[in-house]
Length: 288
Ligand SMILES: N[C@@H](CCC(=O)N[C@@H](CS)C(=O)NCC(=O)O)C(=O)O
Image 1 (cartoon, rainbow, N blue to C red):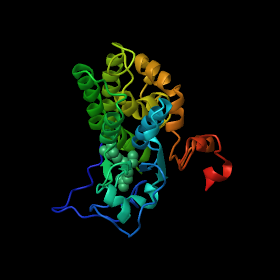
Image 2 (tube, helix red, strand yellow; image 1 turned 90 degrees about the vertical axis):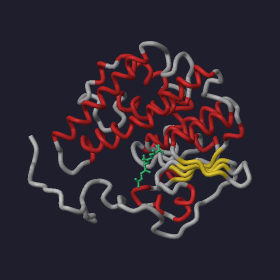
Image 3 (cartoon, rainbow, N blue to C red; image 1 turned 135 degrees about the horizontal axis):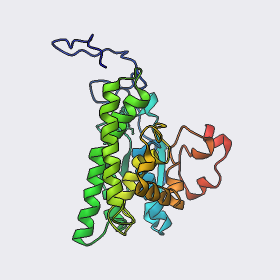
Image 4 (cartoon, helix red, strand yellow; image 1 turned 135 degrees about the vertical axis):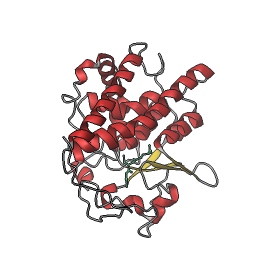
């Protein structure tokens, strides 16, 4: 079952070309690798992101807010190409010293506020604009239970299961078994919760749904890791019902393609600066 040929040395050393999809960007140190300022557009909210599940959370919430008529949520979404190391520019490190997308700069306040960690960005925007987070203590607490659940759980799905099932240069049975087991346990947690109500935190659509859908909703709908059959997602009927209902929301359809730089061309809007960008999305823009 396992390969016992590796014996850890006394002190770990970085193998610069350790292999795998992310070998060229992962380093054991933090901080900027190059000087470059970030672009700034005309809207109060400047988002620096990529259309991964963590990035989609924020663009879905912003599109939902705009759909409600909250004009203060207008935003410029700039593409941060993490495969090219854009997250290590001096400008990006200033908005997020952790060098991970998404990062937001709110320039409607003076001095501008930096907001990082996708869960915190959702909470910040929900509180700033007064939507998608229940106002009563019980409703708010339940929504935050699930928002924090997602922030703690998704790394097992993405960094654990998705990494070893999909990205790792070798298929390690022990690692895939360990994380498939946890991914299925988490899907079962969601399925039982969604048997109790229409949305994750009850009958109201909240930032908990917006956080969880890009990860678990996309997995059960077959959109990431190509793992729907492997994880036998048909077992999770309530998750499937919820995932499809959210996928059908117009704001979700818009938000999930913002800052996407891979997949079908009609699902890529690499940068977003105005609502009309969704209509005027041309071959040229998508490929630039
Ligand atoms: N806990 C962070 C995770 C963000 C994260 O892992 N972002 C990934 C893309 S999904 C990233 O920027 N990776 C670049 C890198 O690791 O250098 C959040 O929720 O914002």
